[in-house]
Every structure is written in structure tokens, then in C-alpha cells.
Image (cartoon, rainbow, N blue to C red; front, side):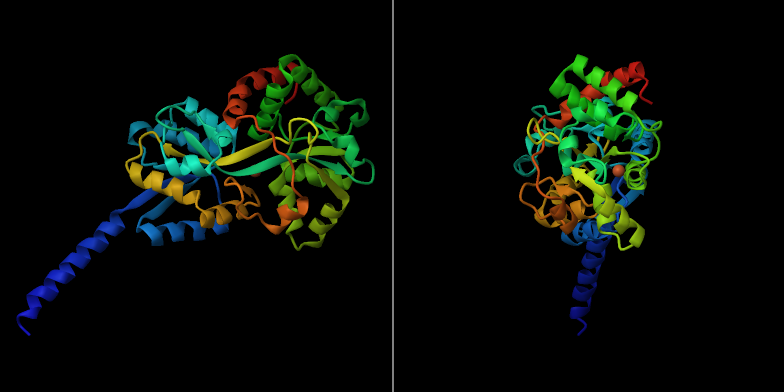
Amino acid sequence: MNLLRPLAAALLAIATVASAHAQDRVLNLYSARHYQTDEALYENFTQATGIRIHRVDADDAGILARLKAEGASSPADVILLVDAARLWRGEQEGLFQPVKSSLLEARVPAQFRGGVSPQGAQWWGMSTRARVIVYDKARFKPGDVDSYEKLAGPAFKGQFCVRSGSHPYNLSLFGSLLEHLGPAATEAWLKGLVSNMARSPKGGDTDQIKAVASGECGVALTNTYYFARLMRSNKPEDRAIVEKVGVMFPNQASWGTHVNIAGAAVAKNAKNRDAAVKFLEYLASDAAQKYFADGNNEYPIVPGAAINEALRALGSFRAETVPIAKVGANTPLVQQMLDRAGFR
Ligand code: FE
């Protein structure tokens, strides 16, 4: 008996050290995503790796400002942002570091990576969302709204509603059009949109969908997940909105519908770099992709991963293939055009 006592004590000591070590392993995540399903995502990662996630929630602009203010002493390891224009901005401001990972390269299509160098990409898309046209089904037909270009046409005088032109979702869409149409046609198109507005830009995408349902606007722009959220709602007033409003994936006959991303990056001054890369790789796994995309009714970035029933009901579509990093890089020029066009 007595002989076993030192062994038991030694084993206990080892176990204590091991668990203390596991508790020490913490990954600091700055996230602009706030969805219930993300909790399960983080718990699965902790169970698989023993690395705990410490999350700081803020919006995209708040996260970028915080990273800048913290500088080299920032505790951030992983950054999650929800728009290519913002990811591009973070890269420009030197807030991320390149990541070389054969797993991420195999799973995240090249179109959805930012700042690619021999050292790897500075950010990686983890889900996509399409920017679609919603329209009043009582007044317009699908053929009226089958391209973004048509929104600037005479049929929509006083009919167009949209959130602020400078919002990243619009900057990215307009940056995509700049890539496809060139600067002169894009600026003319933006001026056409301004002259077609039913009201000054205000509210978020859901407000535009509601304004179409109420008859205040004939057409508007929204990200797919805002409409999918209404489709999955069991409130009668949301069901009524979905009944009245049509959804069109524009430009199927030309370059495809504009898609944006939510994406992840490793912070420039990450103290836990290896764990941060491991977390990005985990987010690209089949199981994590399902949770990550479903949490906000988005499309998984990994081709072939499952999508939720609301997105299935919206139907399949052809997406544009322009690199999202190019779209981000176009946004400063787009902002100048918006200022000239009086698009607030
Ligand atoms: Fe959003």
C-alpha cells in the first residue's frame, strides 16, 4: 500500500499539470459574428483540441479600430469579419498576417482569399452570401429585374430603395460592377440608381425588404441571409412579407450574381499563431462549415457542403467568379464615385 502512495501522488501531479496546461491554452477570437449556433462550433473545437476560445464581440469597424489601438500588445489571435471590403481594409492597415496551409488551400476556393503571397493568404472566406434584387411581385416581373444594370433604367423611376451606398455590402457590390463594367459605365449606373431612388438611403437590408412589401419601394437590394431569415421566421407578419416579395439572382445570363464573404484572418501580433491556424482549418472542416454557414443562413465556402432549407428554397444560381480581393481593392474608387454621384 505504502509503496503505491508515491506513484499515485506522482500520477496526480502529472494530471494536474496536464489540466493546468490545457486551461492555459486559450485562443483569443475577435468576432463580428454573434450567432447562437457559433457557440456549438467553439465547443466542438475546444473538445477536439483542448484549446478554449475567449471571444470578444464587436462589429467589424469596432474590431478594426480596437486592433489598431492595441497595436503590438493586442491579445487577438483570430479575427472574424463579415465583408470583403472590411477584410481588405484590415489587410491594408497591416492588422493580419499571411497563413500558409495546404488544407485551407484545398478547401477554400482561390476566388475567396485575400492578399495572396508566397507566404500564404492574409484572409480566408468561410461562408458566402449573394447580393440579390428583391421586388414587388404585384408590380414587376422577374424579367424586369434580371440584371443589376436594369435597376438604373427608366422602369424604376422613384422605385429603388437601398441602405447607405457607403455600407460595405454596397461598396463591395459596386466594386464588383466596376470590375465588370469599367469606371465610366459604373459611375453612370450609380447616377442612374440615385435618380431612381424612392427615398434617401436609410436602414439595413431587412428594412428595404419590408419597404418593398409595404409598397413604399418597387425594388431593393439585400443580402440573401436577411431574406432567408424572414423565410424561416414563424411570425405571421414575416410570412406576409415573404409572400409579397420576389427574389431575383441577377446577371445569370452575363457574369453571375455578386457574392460576398464572411472570413477569418490570423492577427498580425497573434501570441498563439499555431492554434489560430488550427482554428481556421477547423472552420473549413465539413462539420464546422455546416454550423458556420447555417448560423446566419449563409452558403458554406467549401464546395459541396450542405446548405439550409431556406437557401435551398431560394434555388441554385450562378455566382460571379471575380476574385473577392479585387472587389475589396476597388472600394476606395467606388467611394469617390458615390461622392460625385451624390449617393449617400
Ligand atoms: Fe449583415
